[in-house]
Length: 102
Image 1 (spheres, one colour):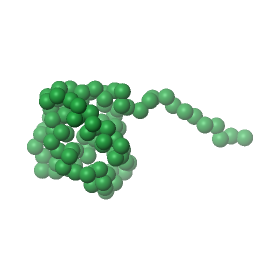
Image 2 (cartoon, one colour; image 1 turned 180 degrees about the vertical axis):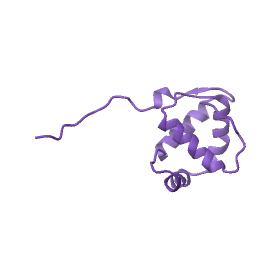
Image 3 (cartoon, one colour; image 1 turned 180 degrees about the horizontal axis):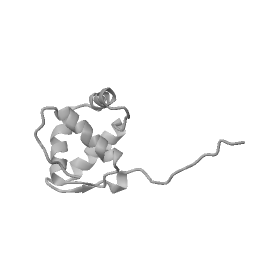
Image 4 (cartoon, one colour; image 1 turned 90 degrees about the vertical axis):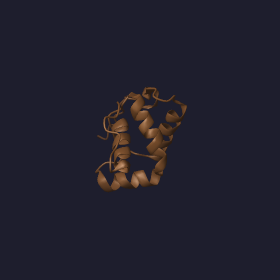
């Protein structure tokens, strides 16, 4: 996943949409441009502000403090312009079913 438009009048909304896409679509690779955008813009907002924005503007909630912290940690470890893999940090796709019958 990479970024197309870097300048946006609603920067906070862009950050929220990007995080939602990363976790909602189980993105495996973040492109270098996207990483740089997030390195610059993600620290501008607290987890609480981003989660509040999401709750106000979307029906489902995908953003959590833990997810933001993991993303920040990965970004801090990456080199400028480098793609990063987040495949090891996505949810396990194993499905668990419970039987509630008689």
